Length: 207
Image (cartoon, rainbow, N blue to C red; front, side, top):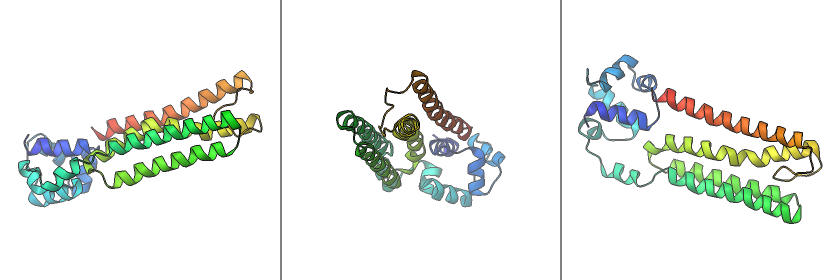
């Protein structure tokens, strides 16, 4: 892997486009394109700026030599926190639904939301202390999966309030079938829209 490959790899791992990198280091997009296609080499000032932005050493960009700090950072992958947060959010949803099913009490809703708030907090705090080059991908993974979990209870609450006095964390089956189908369509459409936007943005960033 040469300097051109390392610049391109750092850019793609961090999920930014050539235009965004060019803006960060103060050059044109064409200059970044030339660096990545080996038509030219960035000057030392630009290399220093890139090393600070990507949180790597100048030696890594120039020679591929990783510092001890970079090796340590790689041990903390942000996707670990995605897994932990997703598990907590899923548990929150299941526990909330189970409590309501057994006791029909409003606190079931609050318990589920507290679990989910903690799950999001774990992800947020973990993201701050994880390797820089894993953060962008972790954010995409987190929202692609967790938008379905985080939206379920709020959507169900609104749906149940609209059609009955219940505050259940899931759609109560006493409603008309057409209302339940409407809930499913709105819920799926909202979550799917977020997922599509995330992946469209990912494709743009990698261009």
